[in-house]
Length: 200
Ligand SMILES: Cc1cc2nc3c(=O)[nH]c(=O)nc-3n(C[C@H](O)[C@H](O)[C@H](O)COP(=O)(O)O)c2cc1C
Image (cartoon, protein in one colour):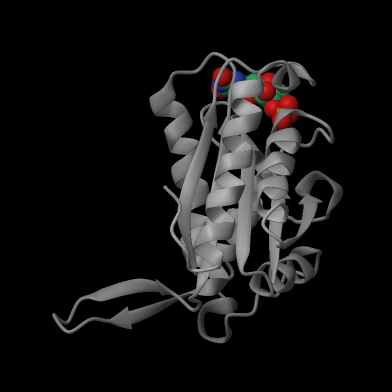
């Protein structure tokens, strides 16, 4: 049973990295194995809209996406974290989100006759971490929504989201104990959801 943390910031040791680590620490404190990857240290290119994946669910772009997807699908919990770059998630996170969306979602006809998109997966839980500096909360929420959509595509229900503003330089978040505690608590909630329990 593992929780996988995926960091969308290119900065190892940056604010996103630290907060994702804290979420993982919260899950680990409840006996759940954790692992973290930084998208900036992997080779994951953007979706090419070739639609080769439409029937097979297999992306044909040959890079590190496949190994990371396998790791994510092999995890019961997924933490996605990204700083805001110009109103949305980083390019590294967006490439991952788009590749997941294209390949892991299928079209189904619902009883009303309409066609809907549905994840090929079920049974996971997730947390999103979205951070920014001076942008307003509604814009930060947009970043969280993008990552929440990705969690849905991976078959994960989002159980908590950590939103943090006024962060800029590497190390800023270490001076904000309330954010570190908030992220830890999100990890505990994730562990509780995974174990099927309830936390107040
Ligand atoms: C290219 C770029 C674009 C950014 N755009 C925004 C933005 O639109 N709004 C904002 O509040 N902060 C913006 N930031 C600031 C980052 O979100 C902020 O520094 C964050 O703490 C970086 O996270 P990290 O330490 O995990 O790398 C931007 C930073 C960069 C490098």
